Image 1 (cartoon, rainbow, N blue to C red):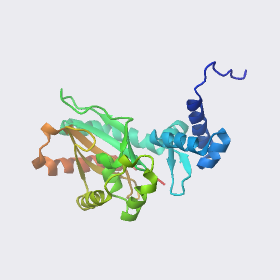
Image 2: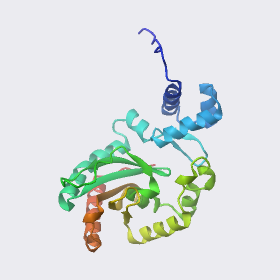
Image 3: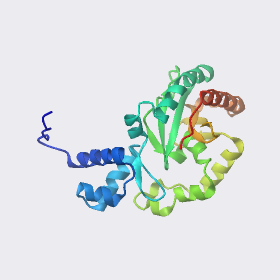
Length: 257
């Protein structure tokens, strides 16, 4: 094959980000310093590139500040990755959930302190919550994110939201005291209610979806305009969500590790 000819006007930042993503996909764990050296850029530039990849789920960062391929790269590498299989298994159950409750349904996973919607089906109401598929939000502002955060121990939550991780984005760090209280309530009840946290006028209710070892791997939720939310119907809605989550789990979700 003939060697590729670079475009006349290459976008350097995009080129660096794509090269970093390929490194992660092919080589696995890499640090900011290693990426900076390989790209020939400053550590601060490499850090911004990697944080962008994390934000878009092309990368994830572990507790040792090492970066690894994220869900998007996993999907690109393995057509039958765990995320891909989870989504495929859940779609039919999401549609049935929409048919039963008459509201839009979503399936989301957590990557660090963010939630990514991997499947979304809209209901047929003229006034409805639109598809969230592919969108990324702060985990503590989404229903799926909250039920997944509730699976963490208090020290794990504190570590995830440590102040040093938010030096460049302090406005994105939640009030930990309030979050701890909220997560404790979710642990006790087994479900989360998101009353206009991620979007004004939208209420969502969600439960966890667990793998074969009992670990929560996704959050299943229904979203509706706040004008149609009736708190008196919450027990029945939660029961329906748990049945739908159980149906997804019955398909045999592999452990996430």
